Image 1 (cartoon, rainbow, N blue to C red):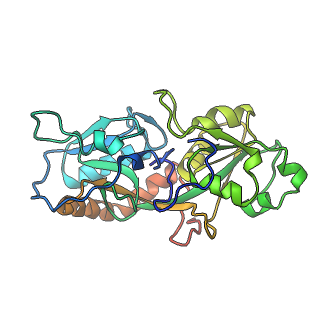
Image 2 (image 1 turned 90 degrees about the vertical axis):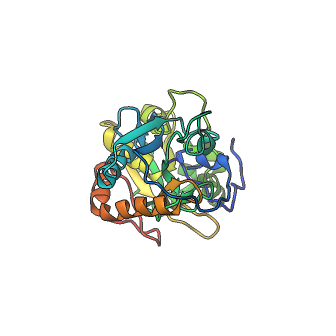
Image 3 (image 1 turned 60 degrees about the vertical axis):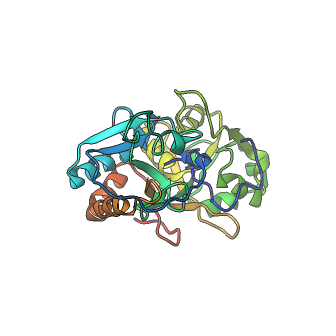
Length: 295
């Protein structure tokens, strides 16, 4: 899943142009379709990004890779993966793409989409996360919550460099709290195949080029655990009036494929505890429907 963006609202301020990291898949647009006759597929064909940890990679090391393996096992289907970078036109070029003279689509399941994403038919959310503030302990910051951060003296705040991805809810959050001047913008859509959303932490935060980063929760939690030094602190952000920060994450199938979506939903439901364990292993911050952290 990539950096999510509220479906009904664009950022009121564009520092520039992500995970999803979720915002990346929304460029495909929505379609409507009638229910199609259902025939169980010969394989579980999944679309994912080849270089987008902690979500997925071409070595099968991401948490979405692991969840796809669980679904394939439960559905008694072999797993096939089609790798496609999570950039513009993802849906059109993956789950809706059928090669000329071919009877099958490139894939039948899109992992890690916003639960309210209308370009595909989504399952119920299999987890919910929120944006997080990440900083390096022992440098300029020493706070235990987002409220403490926002309560810092202006002289401290004014000297901070906060890395953010463009076109995410973070921009509205910064604007609401008068922090836009501290923002260091990063491009959400990056054509470099070696780029991954975690580089903002893995490279620039670690190196001290920025003092903090506000990123989608799975990115912040995963890289905070996998970076040995400096120690990174991850603070969840809560939604506020006019600024939505937490989002549900679902699986997506083509519009009209209700029977297939139902099978995928059953597989998710049957493996809820195992999926939750995988999320914990990857240090993914999860929240409930009210945005409260799940311990």
